[in-house]
Image (cartoon, rainbow, N blue to C red; front, side, top):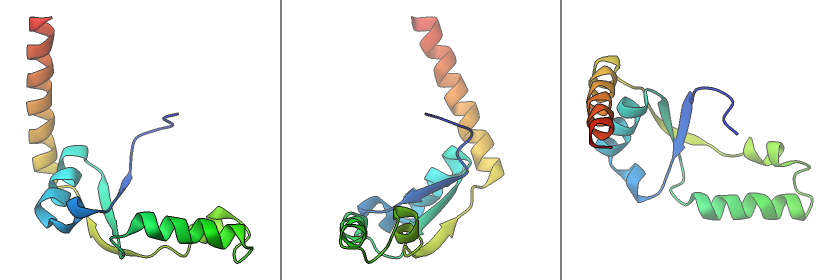
Length: 98
């Protein structure tokens, strides 16, 4: 369930290797985007679940604290407003065509 506005987006994978695309995500969403230091988040997740299963960590929250982050991208307010205006224009066109 959605409990409030998104404040931080955690991104990884091939997409996250492009600073341009990650900055666009921050600008479009208006949220901070953080990248994991490892681009292999699936493998890291599997390792953390294994650590929990074999008792190396007691909880998944404890395991999550082992994840480290690299670059952080902050949204540009001016570009965020521009993206919002484009989206609203598109939504208005969708309603007219419905």
